[in-house]
Length: 237
Image: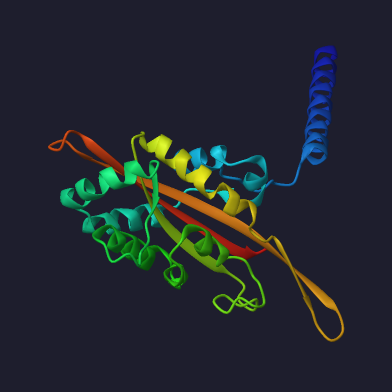
């Protein structure tokens, strides 16, 4: 009888400890549960190199990320390049200080590469409306008197092509970032429109992507040219 009582008491004690442990775990789970934070994917590769090269003010004005679509568009556009095109432009680009903004309106073979890139990467083809670096970036600024992209358009997208010589692909991206730094610094983040009754403030975010491809002419003294594609998108915040 004594053995049965001892066994019963021991079993009751084990059950009590188990129940307390279970309750403690449940309370801990409830107390420590936190809301899920959104995943943020930082820029990598050439987009990260570009962003790191920007000044602090310009970097605060744009968020960079990688784009498979831009990569594919650049590869497709480079189908219109050739050894002759690269050899022809190499010395000219180098003489202009390494970085050369490709004007799609130039009528040259390398200009056709820019046109092909824009046609593939810029859905609305807005980038075809300007032919200089600064004027193309200004297409993103939502001024009322801008007849190209009026204020009423929520989103805008531009795509630009550069060629760089004399440095590595990483160096080429850095050179392009420095060339664009002032223009990115001046991107408009807020727009105030005044109506008959009140003033409305519209907020914008800017995102960007960079892709780069290097072509080397082994048969022509190893002349190398890096093509750098830059896309900047304006969206409502």
